[in-house]
Each structure stands twice: as C-alpha cells, then as structure tokens.
Image (cartoon, rainbow over all chains, first blue to last red; front, side, top):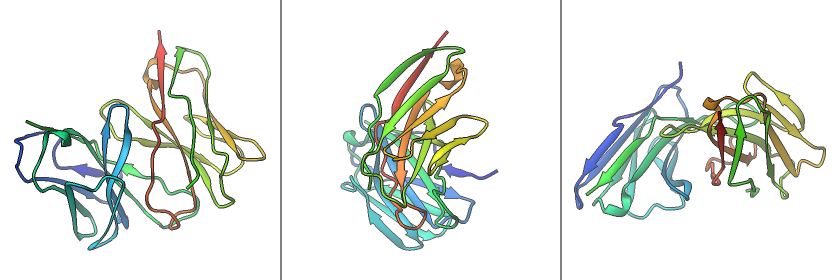
Length: 115
Length: 112
C-alpha cells in the first residue's frame, strides 16, 4: 500500500518558533509538494521539489522554506511561525513516469495552530 | 495551464445520481482531465481520469464530449459517505507540468 506520511497530525506552536513539518513517501516519486489549505481558499501550493536538493516556489512561498536532502523526504520549515500560518498543511508526491496524468498521493495532513 | 470552472456547491439525497460539470474552454491537445475527491480533514485522493468520450471505474464515470471543453463526473446512487469536495484538474501528460494547481472544487452534500 503506497504511503505518504506526515510526521504530525496536530501541532501547536508559539509565535516566533521555528517549525519543521516532515513528509516521507515510500513510492520512489520524483516530485513532492507542500500545500496549505484554508477555508474558502482551496489548496495553495507553497513549494515543490522535482528532485533531490531541487526546489521551486509555488504560489505562496513567503515565510516558508523547504529541504529535500533525500528522495523520500521533503521538509517544510516555518522560519518564524506567525498566527497567519495557522492552517492545514498537506504533503503530496507524484511520479513523472507513465502515460497520462499520474496521480498525486497525499498525506493525512498536519493541522498547525500558531498561538 | 487550462483554467477550470466548477460549481462551488451541490446538494443531493441518498440514492440519487449526481453529475458535476467542469468547464475547461482552453484545454490543450495534450491535456488530460482528472478528478479528485477530498473528505474533511484528509488529503485529496484520485478518482478518475480521461482524455475523451467516456471512462468508468468502480467509483464514478467521466463523460467528455467531442470538443473536450467540458467534462462531467457522474456518481451513481450516492450515499452519505460521498459527501466531499470534488476537484477537476486539467493537466498535460506527466513530466510536462509538475505544479498541480488546484481550484476550489465542488462541495457536495449528500442528505439522508
């Protein structure tokens, strides 16, 4: 059974803290993504990575950074957490191999609250 | 990337067939039409994909007219557990687009 696993389901952090959200996939996928999802705004892409040590900004990268040292792991870093980063964070992975659209697999999500 | 337009919300009752239409007027020749389903507090999951005509699997059917400017996701005999948000995405073949940009989706409420 394919899996994308996020390190925490729920997280509460204080304003100004450095926060690490970890994501691991076991499908040997090249591409990994970090989204945040807020009511009325849908899924918004923060960053994605198409290879080890490679990354590209998504639509809302400000206040975030990412790290991909190994193919299976993609970390999202909030350098200094703020209350407007309270959200549901979703990690996904997807392969470039195959024909047609190759489906994206999502983790269970991390609900982060910054107080 | 082809822009998609779907209704924001729909209501239905158990046992009914639900059809959700997505318009994608500027779809390109290489684009595939893909639908995902998202339950509350979970990540989206793939339901079905098609290029033209009709595709059916154990979950849903996807109808695509000849001009491919729209598509309809059909859910037969919905149950309460089909209450979810349904997303329509139009994407080129794997490897040509990596970003996966999502719209707001259609929030389907199935009532008893």
